Image (cartoon, rainbow, N blue to C red; front, side, top):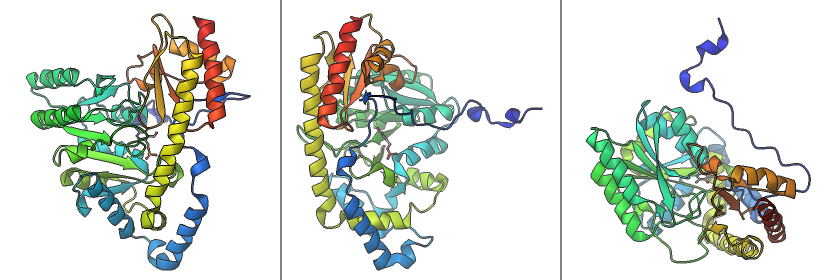
Length: 390
Ligand SMILES: Cc1ncc(COP(=O)(O)O)c(C=O)c1O
């Protein structure tokens, strides 16, 4: 008799997520989408915490619902984005990750079809997989998800008498490709979801961080019935706060709330963030972040132009954290990742972004974390590694 025999099937090979150890020595890591700590508003957050404790400490430090001030601020922000969400259609969570993790409990039985982008953010997708979902990948091109390929999958499922439980999409500054879906495609995507009766889960982690081009409405602004949108304070304020939210159809929100582990969403945390955000301060902070990430992105692109052989193709993003690169035929991103480490640079190889482990012809670079001079140095080292392999 083994203890391990007691585990549920989904837990048999499960392991806790562990941060990769920082590479040792002088390595420039361009692998991870970490926010730049240089702009964490430390002093203002301390001040906001003191204000929350002084103004409403006996409620916010007790078991309580989230601070209604923050709920009001989020609803007003959604309205500005063209999303008409009511209070009861909004649910806060410990990062958007918590809400994405709970989602399969509400929607997925083992064997159910879930449509994802290929490549995508595996942090969310691995949880869908653990619930027994059958993942169906749709290629991502320069304009986001390939909607002809998506429609073909939806038709095949329908011919089988099935519906996909949901489509997980990151239409704005996608992780990992940095691509953004144009308006016409957004309209077609929500029309497809409605026609085939499937929910879109719009992950909008980076949507606020546009530093070029015209603002586009989130999918949630285009459909009240078939879009659940998740968003987060991680990229616009600080990921260590662990604060995200979901909004969308009431029936889905109510069920997510029922399965969420912590009922309230952190009364004190929400009280603190609400006081920080008051008087348009968050908007001013986001404007600063956009300018910072624009400079870093430009530094990375200029370095790529200078240091990479012309055979390397890349996508220039209009916002977000990432630049996606594609290698010429015959070159392996995994092999490049190991050789790059020897040359003093770290990248995220494509297979870490594909649920089926494919994508070894591509890799992701992140310009969010490193200072500009380190970005340039990292790309120089990477260029050397690439030329060494070609
Ligand atoms: C697309 C995407 N969604 C969600 C998250 C997680 O965000 P949170 O910190 O809100 O859990 C990330 C973080 O990297 C992300 O890239």
